[in-house]
Length: 570
Image (cartoon, rainbow, N blue to C red; front, side, top):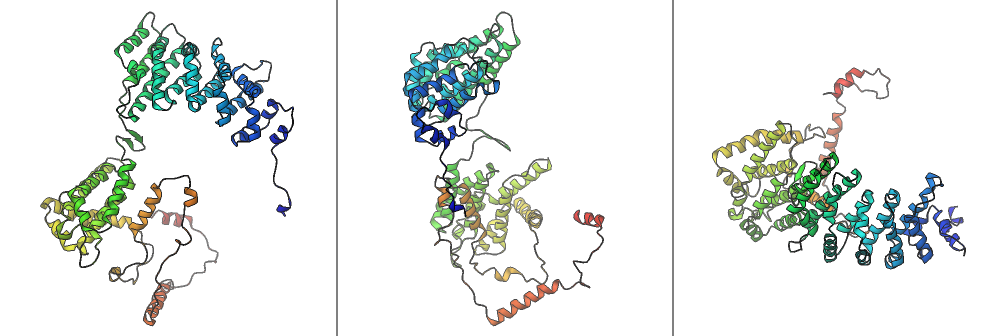
């Protein structure tokens, strides 16, 4: 049996660490060294954080490997060293960011003559970038003391990793006051002007391209962050310089001064086009087009709150919501955000609560008690909105467009109005409100109900069983079902979909044992009901016995594929 065996395995790294003469290279040869590091293997971390190990790791990512090594294995150890240094383990971050001697080793990489090895440059950029994010104050203080830092980065701008490093300085520094301090430092170092100077006929094309791309990214990053910040936050000095007339004039001068080159014109034009981009605040690109202003989580939750308040069936709540034009606003959002089904369902719940949720037969629906629901049909123009939205959707589809995402919920709302017109505790009130509609609107509504809505309901209905000898369900309309109604089921599903996925969601998901109980009332059938049930069952069974002759399903017979294919096309 499997429990007879000791399945506990000791990591080979732990076995190596038992040796006093173990070397860093030996540990790095192990396939699971990075996994053990991220898993916080304490013995391994204590070994790696020793001074001589940290120096060797930094040396590996900043020193060109011997050229006589096989190409496949030349950068094996530098790559592993970079992954260990950027594994986001606090003891390594603290050691690397807190030891100035290690930072000096890293900085020395920039003092090499160009070109830099692109792979080592990427290791260097990734390591410094991680420190900028994790040990921000220490690293920024160190870099600001280096007067030639920006010049060295620009000297190696032909390596794309240096472009990434500059962007990390702009976008990854927190908190906001420290980020603003870094932006002012970069502006004092004339970063924008020096990048603009690189877009010049006499410069290398790779340097021009990376300088242009850096300027474009600075513009976009700065504008995006400005849109996310509060209005009282200080303006981005780099963006202000880029958008200045002086900066644009300098760029144009570099593009066309002296002998013109295609590279300088193309790269300079890219910067100008980025400056002219009209990026609308809050706009989101979706699969159905650009969403100018998202609905947002706050407005969705307010809609849920309004729906919950209406479902309390308190007349004063409905009256106050009508006075505040809340339902009118919700309907505006329903048609504006035609693809937000979470919102559509909440609006449907609101309309349903107003139309058909009376607390008793003596007390009509709060939305229509004493004609308090007039705003739904008059001020909110519910009928007109249904008709206009339907006609607009038909026009879009006729032109080859996509059916709008709120049409399913609109169909259900229209059916709710019709059902309450035909039967219900507020039938008379709704009938009067429909009669008060303008004559042309009333005619459109009647035609819509008799033709369009009827046909839509027919298409949406799938007959699952034979209706032979089945009685009308109207006699059961007044029976109260022990099961949740359709809208409550949808509400539960909607709540599940938009709930926040917290860290302990998996532990809390589902029902508690005491909650997982169906309180169903078991009805004891009388003798007459039992007889009726038996007769109904026999009637269903008889339908399958009506064939003139019984067919043996196991009998071998010739298969006519043409007949089957024809039947499938019906």
